[in-house]
Image (cartoon, rainbow, N blue to C red; front, side, top):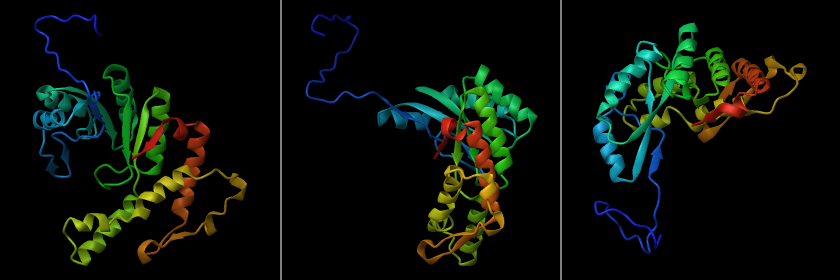
Length: 247
């Protein structure tokens, strides 16, 4: 560096005795995000100004489909991102499954530079997909060379927990955590990652499992067996170990 030369218009900062670190990449911001009748407070201007002040220099923002359309959702976020002040990329959420969604995933990868898709096992009635749709999405990601991400919670159990909180009159922020104990997050992960066993040794009718976190007991049987079947299919397709990460 001693022989390096710079122009008169370049600002030189003496970093002697200091750590020089690259800018951070935040892969999970929600900017101007419309979600279940709410909108996140920060848009691309305010959110990225705050990020830059803290040393983050790139965002990978989540896009949700517009009326189920990935293409329409992407176009909406292109407009929002015109206020951007730094580098950004996009993830795409997949909230339903049909041939149109399959074709639009291919469009996103090949023409819009999106190579990661997120699937939700929670938020029933808004974003939640069942195991069959999740499997179809995984297979499509594999064919496209894209990354599949999963919000891994048991959506049905969470809804039951929310109902219980309302019955008990617990409607403050603390009710959010209480409605989804750790088991609701662990169960999907455990079932999708459990070791394979020969199909001949499965006994679905007696496949009872229970956990007792904090004195609460949760049981599952045939639903677990269904997910075990899907995991068996995924593993033989080499989807989960190659493409699936859990957040």
